[in-house]
Length: 129
Image (cartoon, rainbow, N blue to C red):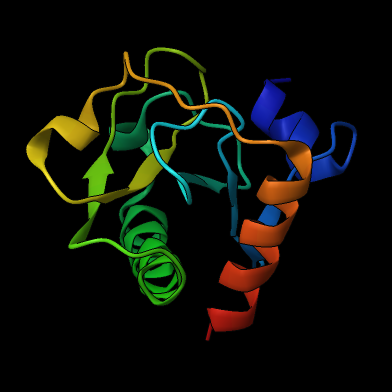
């Protein structure tokens, strides 16, 4: 069971943004920017391109809704999208508020207090449609 599956199951606490029957979105606790969110399928599949086509397409549509909520919450020019898939063996999409290309640097991490993460998550949830 991956750490993401444990988060989805509620075994590990998270700053949840949204979920539906198939997908789950939560704040990254080692973010590159305020509002950095991960979108995962609830089914545990390691490599994103091994997902069944409709599940993959649906994941991107769900991620779009999450990205729109982040845009309404965090000041940024765009929401950057990255799929790397090496650090956790569970398919996931990174949604990162960006203003420059350099903002997509995964080596850069910012520190955000638990209280601020909770506040950001609440605001993004309020903007999720």
